[in-house]
Amino acid sequence: MTHRLTSAYRGHARVFLKDLEAIRPSAIVDIIHSGESFVLEQTVQRGMKAMREFQIPPLDQAYK
Image (cartoon, rainbow, N blue to C red; front, side, top):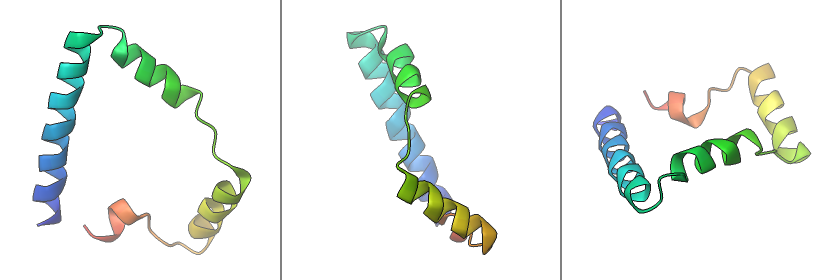
């Protein structure tokens, strides 16, 4: 069931990006640039490091 939910979400994301690009062609490049300049706070980074050290799977992998 989780796989179907993920696929459905991807479909909505694709439609959203196509609509956004139709309105503003530079939107995709702007989103990529935003992701590249995204910085996590140190508390989040420490939590993610602890999860890797204790081998706790990320949520997107935990329910597959």
